[in-house]
Length: 172
Image (cartoon, rainbow, N blue to C red; front, side, top):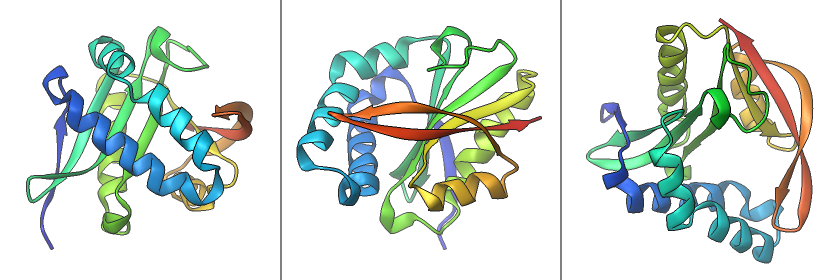
């Protein structure tokens, strides 16, 4: 098996980040959502303006998972006011961990999660937290295996569809 590595993402990686973001989100959720809702979400969430704003935000950080010089997944972290909800100064949000379907089960998600854990510990955060769709059982099991517990829920809007995300947290 080829070694997996994690590399920081910069503004120079904008188009590559958009591509992996769109592809992994689509692969993950297309079977459970309408095509219209998917296209609306992808257009808004991965536009040039949105992604470049996120990349330039000093309170957000992105990392690629790379195998054989190919980007196969990515991680997005938020602290401070960049957090989507909690905005607790002692917490770091994992907003996204996505891996191409063909590479799932090969530890790329775990590698990205370990990067989040390293960043959180280096920056002395007390908690890691995230939101995960209540119907994404595979992801929920992954986070539970890594010590996360549900502490609430919130609404996530995908196109015109309001969905429930479980909010999960891990104490460090």
